[in-house]
Image (cartoon, rainbow, N blue to C red; front, side, top):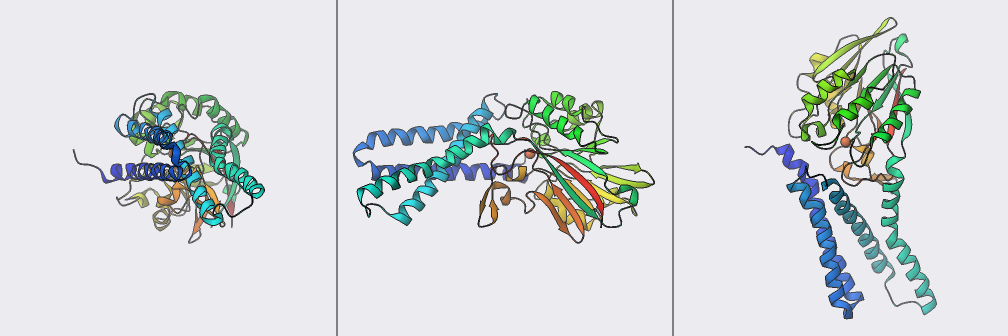
Length: 381
Ligand SMILES: [Fe+2]
């Protein structure tokens, strides 16, 4: 069976993360040996423990992704990899910048206290992201300027829920809360832009049952994400969606009428890396109408613009999920695969909105990227 390039690419960030995590464990071991030269046995035991934790977290995910316990192992392994790497960076910065032994004993004690607090900060921040940040669902409103927008489409409201990843780390009660929030917006159209679940045995049917409670004046439309491909549930999601009143547009379009104005909404499946994007999607547009594209991954945006779409609505990045501001810019994993991480971007007068979505992948934490229900308002320019 040929290996798909995009399947290999999907594993690449995880493999890189595993490599970095193991290198960090080794570095921690070396640093501890310097600090505690007469505790070599204990330090070696710690190294063994931390390497085992990382490996037990990563390997079952590669080898047995459908074991029920794998998401928890992965969360533990990924979480420790992030915390130990961040603490290691802080430790190196601290020891290289401030050195050691150059202060009197009182000052040294104070510095040691600050150092301990600094080194514990990554664990505390990630813990906050797991316990609080992951469930801190927010409503985000954004106005999208659209050229030549008909009067009857001005202030049209589209409510978007995306990247639900219903499973152990985003539970039905969380999704119910998000749907209640979406219904309060009294939007005209609801959009569900993919990643309903994480993996094959996740509760797809329950996800669509809850999504069926979305209440808008017009239709609920959607597109499928990469996790529908990984979970091999594209056809099932489409059929269950139909029964739940959700029309997943799989290379298809719907023309909608609001007052005297028409709007065209097209949708495509997840666009695979290393293959041309949106092949033939120009045939889904309607000349003379406002054309909206639903695409799970946002990196199609420049192609969508060239094919005549006024607005692309996407998710996929989780807004970085765990993101830190460094010198006014955000640092996160999503930066490795798209420049469109979160929010509205404009190109040649056309727009994309990238939602942070609701759920999580890998580590069940959100830091600097709270889960969101997005309310998109079309506005005349
Ligand atoms: Fe996602």
